[in-house]
Structures are given as structure tokens and as C-alpha cells.
Image (cartoon, rainbow, N blue to C red; front, top):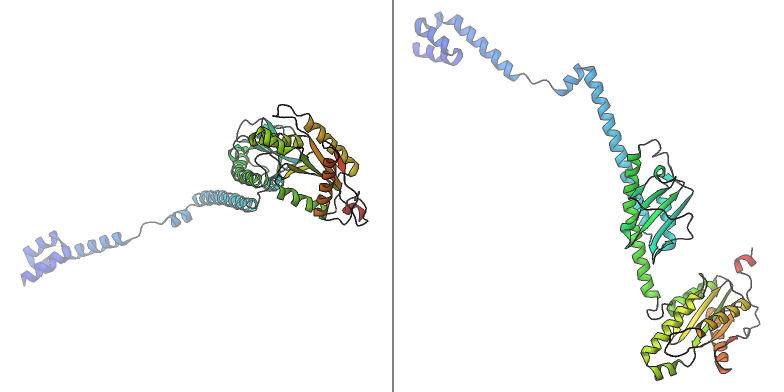
Length: 392
């Protein structure tokens, strides 16, 4: 019996109860046993009580709750701004994917930037051969001094300047003339505006790189490597576009006189020198919207938009004189030229054929001269007014 009492006492009461049981049995140790049980229960309850949660602490302290709410709002605002910027940059990138033409680049770049800055004009400039070249039309203002990746309007006399040089082999920039922040940026710190500009600058530099590469590929396909003039397919394509659109256009067929003699007497290398010199000479004496292409062998086709018959004859005379004045060639060189102006309803191949007939007329009457084609054989009139104006 005492062994059972002792075991019960040890399980419930610990060492103090054991001593009481040993001296007087369970009855004598009852007060100590009750005390031990109560202590054990209290200890167990204390261990089971959960720690105070952060939510309860916030609810218990209005000041702490207010501070936490304010910090959370600030963090959400920052996240929303970052999300808006990320969304805007993604949309800009998506819009610029299809931008590969130089003529379209300035307009597309300007549209991208006007999401964040309004402006009075835009220039997209590339440094080539010692001077700035404006893409997409004539420059609006003077080229800027590139002193850093981004120059905000307040740093550059009201212009926003993005250095896009990473997109080209030399230098390039986008200039927003008279730039002002849109409502999405107005009132923000200069550091925030600069950050947005730098993010957009990266996207635009990549897009400009794509435009330059595409232009280079086009040039490889379009330009005759020996003469530097356009290839025949490109010249015929442009002429067909002009004729079909009802534009006023004339053509001149140019042929180097006695070119076979140059090859026979001086060698084909000398012939290449002559071809290259004549090609460069023709291109140098034409207007910006005129076009010259190598039509085959020693023949060149010159396309003269917005040029009536009399004007085309004058241009042809100027080209003939310029070639005759070339110096430093293996032998003196002259050209014969046939000129034809487009008639109403005349297809492009017929226009070229008439110019070619005039060329043979020039060669047959002594060479080194200009001959004008006869009128088209179907009784039509020379087109002197573009169709778009005649129908207005």
C-alpha cells in the first residue's frame, strides 16, 4: 500500500510530496499534494497561453496602427508607380518592334516619348561622315551637345535630349524641342523624371539599332557595289510607283561612249574605274529626290520626279558636261543621253523604251550629246500636272 501511495505522490506532487508520504502516508501528505497539483496545472496553463500577435498589438495601439497604415499606403503607391512605368515601357517596346524604316523612326520615337513629355518638335540625329544627319526629314533645331545619357529640359534650355549612341557605331540622339512633362510626370522630382527618361532611352537605343541594321541590309540589296548607284530592280520599282501614282516624271538613259574600247585598250580594271567615276558623277549632280541606277553594263537610268520635258533636257545636258569634265581617268570619257517625259496613260516600261530609243539617236548622230524622245505613239499628251492635283 505504501508503494502505491509513493508512486502516486511522485507522479502528482514531486519531491516535497514524496517526503510527506514517506513520513505519514497519503493522508498526512494531502495538503502538500493539493498544492503540487495546483502548481502543475498553473504551469501547464502558462505554457499553453499563446504569445501576443502583431495584429493585437496594432489594435491595442492606435498610433502604431496609423503609422503602419501610412507606411503601407506609401509602399503601395511606389509599387503602383513601378507597375505603371513597367506597363508603359512594355507598350512602348511593343509599338517599336515594327519600326525598321528610317523615314518612320522619328515619328514612332516621338509618339513613344509623348506619353511622358509633350513637345513642339522632334529631331532624330545620327553622326555620319563628320556631320549630323537627320532621320525622317529636315532637322527642327540645332544639334545638341551630348554631355550625358539624359539632359532634362531644365538642364538644356527647354529641350529633352536622349543620347542614343549605344544604338549606333558613332553618335546619335533624340531631341524633344520645348519639352514639358505630361500630367503623369508633372510635379515629380527631377530624379524620377530622369529615371523614366533613362528607361525609355534604353528602349529607343535598341530600336534605333534595329533601324540602322535594316537600312544597311536594304543598302546591300539595293546599291550596286561598283558604282554606288542603285540597282536596276530598285530603279524600275520606284519609276513604276511614280508613273502609277500619276506623278510628273521624266527619265534619262545614259550610256558611256566607246566603253568597250576602254576595256580592250586599258583592261577591265580601268573599265571598272571609269564605271565607278561616272556613277559617282551622275549621283553628285542630281537633286535629293532624283534617282540614278545602273541599268546594265555601262548604262545608267536617271529618274527625275516633278520634272517636265524641258527641265529634263537641261538636267541631261548638265550631266553630260559633268562627265566630260572628269579628270584622272585612264582615258577621257563622254556619255550619250536619251531623254523622255511621261505621257498620260503611258506605262513605265514604255517610258524607258522611248528614252532608250532617244539614246540610240544620240549615239547615231555623233555621241557626247543629248537627244529627246519623240512623243508617245498613241496620241497622248505629256503629263504636266500630277493626277492628284488634276482631279482636285
